[in-house]
Image (cartoon, rainbow, N blue to C red; front, side, top):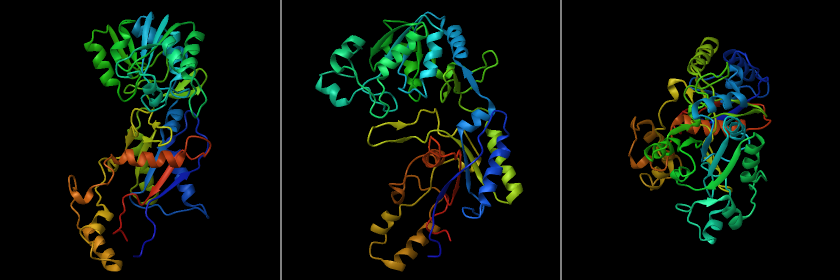
Length: 399
């Protein structure tokens, strides 16, 4: 075996992005500067991957909206009276500012929280606590008073926040009345109001369909709020408030838009400057689940909203340990290695449904790569909003 290193993921340190920055130059210059680093440098190769966090793209685009912008759009689309807010995730960064905007645009919010956890796994209470109290989360609708009687005041394991209390006080501070209920059936909101904002992320299409079929008068999702500019604000025609996160106490940064031309342009610039054809993607949350607290780290509507054509599809890989334990169980050492390399070199172009691919991860390439990037770049002070990946499309037979 001549080669001893497979996939390498590097976080690329960059200057701080400001509104109006040219992201194509910003990213390509950062990568090429890192490649020339005397200690940490690397050679650019064909099919390397450049990945950019959605946050820096949105910042450069100036894709921001204020609480007042959200309030204006909510009032216009709901009428501004009593509005149900259904199944929001428990997040100060992802939803609290959106909730402030909604609250400022209506007179009353009926806040329906799913339990024992939200859509992405943040727990209000544990499933064991629910079962111990004899509560059926599939059927039972709990008032705030009943919830407190059964479970008391609970804080999030990692943030130390009681999100029930936090959201209740946040709504009240915006001048709106609030009533909190706990239920997992979307229709539980309808005795209180027939104007509803489905605030869930990945389950929202189902939630909206159930409410519409049950006779709700107005049903919106977060994707329907700020799907067009409000008084010159940022917007996202596809996702609205989905994928937004806190920029300041009064402003959110929206999910990036118009990014396909950007990733294609970076690919073109890199080809012109290096002679190498690299792939490029914009990524958000990676979509992986924490085994300790159960949080599914996926508050964005998609992992990668924009990417070059070479990143479409799913992996087409053989499972080496399957080959070693089955097809070549009688071999060892160099003979085993040669047999597996030969099998990889002649593998079918489409292994869908083949037993030898069993156990390989059945996810889109962009979802897998996005998870790698999200873990590499982190979410704090690493200062690496660009990730450079090499060898991702190589395999055991690649020299």
